[in-house]
Amino acid sequence: MFNEFLGLGFALFNFVLLLIMYKVFGKTGLFAWVAFATILANIQVTKTIEIIGLTATLGNSLYASTFLATDILNEKYGRKEAKKAVWLGFSSLLIMVVTMQFGLQFIPADSDFAHEALETVFGLVPQIAIASMIAYLLAQHIDVIVFSALRKIFPKDSQFWIRNNGSTLLSQLIDTLIFTSIAFFGVFPFDVWIQIFISTYVLKFIVSVLDTPFGYIAKKIRPLDEQEAVR
Image 1 (tube, rainbow, N blue to C red):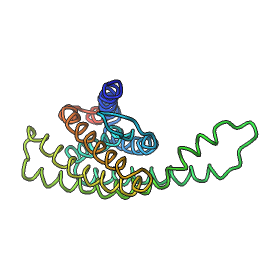
Image 2: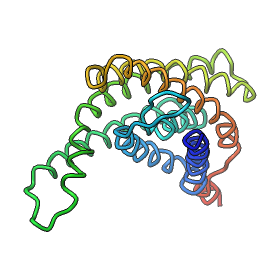
Image 3: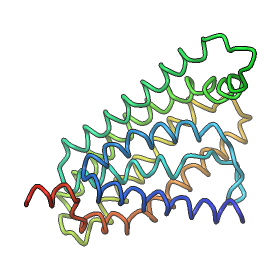
Image 4: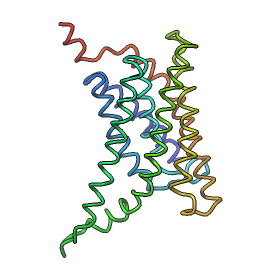
């Protein structure tokens, strides 16, 4: 049960850090979170783990937290700001992929000890990143659109959980299907691929439910930069 407890703690830790970034830096902090969480999630996803009895990839909670960040932006600042964050995350991932592929082309010195490790991780990144970028753009835009649509149907503050979970669970299903199909189909045996698909979505489902209270907390947070602006 070690991975399960560690995974739960890590997910909660991510959400706390996200709220701290929002409190200290306002919506700029949410933009920054989307950028580096997208990059880190695509590095972590190269590692597979055993959790809830299935083979899963790491990085699910970090990646899922980007959907919470865009939902907060959508809720408090509008659809335009949420879409801006989506494109920022996409651009950050693209820049990471391109720059690291250039970095791998340099011939390492005799004293180098990092090249093989970097090649192991970032050699897999292009296929994973292509899968992630396609899935990310589609899923995040669907999340923003569905969240906005649900806000018209369920406009009350108390109904944020419907907007948050409804948009995230649908968009994460699409994201998981597209990502695992492009990144891992043919890389792993079919039975392992099915496990990764199911476990990835189940984990994202759990994380989506866990992030809801943090969304309500974010709605009550007044960022420091906005307090300074009032003064």
